[in-house]
Image 1 (spheres, rainbow over the protein chains, first blue to last red):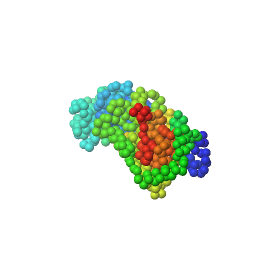
Image 2: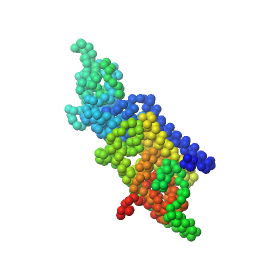
Image 3: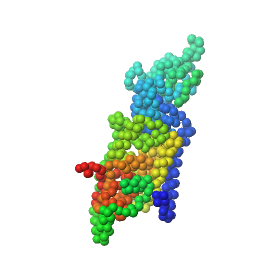
Image 4: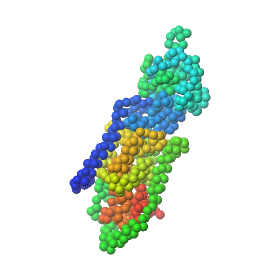
Length: 249
Length: 323
């Protein structure tokens, strides 16, 4: 053993080298453990791509190659940075910036995943469950104020893209290039890619009351399209990653 | 067999030692080399060689082309959509076929505790490829960190020559210890802990997908290599190198040593990133007259280039016999 570690001649040089090695080796191991901090602190905060398995297993199974990102037609997927700890290089979606709108239909990211971190058994967008949209800023909602909306949903400089089936079935275009003119704002419902996941409900029984409120149903997949398209300063609907739908939430 | 095992143990951290016995061929050669006349002749040859300033970068240039080309293919596959190798060095598809870095795949399987079929396919392909090309050839011929570290090493050597920095060698056993530590961490915590600090993954993803703050870690590592310890990461730490080293131990592509031609002046050990694999080039350290360089060799070819007598050369086992 002493021969293996080269300590048979215990002169001070050798001892110093050994100490140095032990210290630096420990430092490297310690540095690798720093990745724990963000994982523990912000547990399950990122919205993961469609089909992502349970968060801690997802972080383990993901090989951090970014193939899911490469196939996304709307470039909704980005990779975690050092601040994500063990989520470094792991894909996530920031829906306010660019949501998944299921442009690909066949869940390309899932097919691209080499490790099954995105669950291969899903085959339709309706089966996806990334999270749930919640009404987190009701006061900002135009529909709830009985207001309409005119112009590009997120302003002329917003870089986000979306596939408008009525314009081009296969090509996503900038949301900024697609202005709206709505008597009563219903963008979240209008652009939701999942049928029946969200609806506008009158806020009173009075037919002259034009106020409507968006109501999210159990069919919501948490794709975040509503969060991206919402023209309010602060998105009215936001996705709670990995949350489960509850009545009245 | 003994020499092979010895090379393996040296890779794990053992300090190379003088063999306790030699083959008859080696014994005869040694005796011939130790006569005063032979010594004198060697001295003259070394002097002549130093004067001739024999210098070639044939292998190095091809290697740099290889590293840049492979990494560029990854980038262009995404950026201009040529779709040759999609993904990063950790995992990819090569014209549609799964490829998985052996160490990343190992980390994933230990952390996830599932055997993923695509990963098995990808790993087998890569395993076969690197067995064929010689294990740690990955390091010298593909790894982007290797190229950066190589450039920083040149700078380190320049600074060291002026006495501005000093190399602090470490015990190579720490790589073996860390290898076990990272495997256990993945198994116990369920996270791919090593991937958080892997400069290979960080660089590969950065090239293709853009800036990452994790690059600061890579800069920090290069800083250690520049100011404190020569080739710190590749020599003493990287578990990826170790994984490929194990694969390459059995590879047909080898650098071989011919004691008869060797002048024992040690130029090869000076340029080598893993000089312990060249211990047999020291007088009296070669057990046989002809030997294979050990498993830790990255097949970078620096020793082949610098050797003035072609005592070290690339060889494909079996092929030379066949031809």
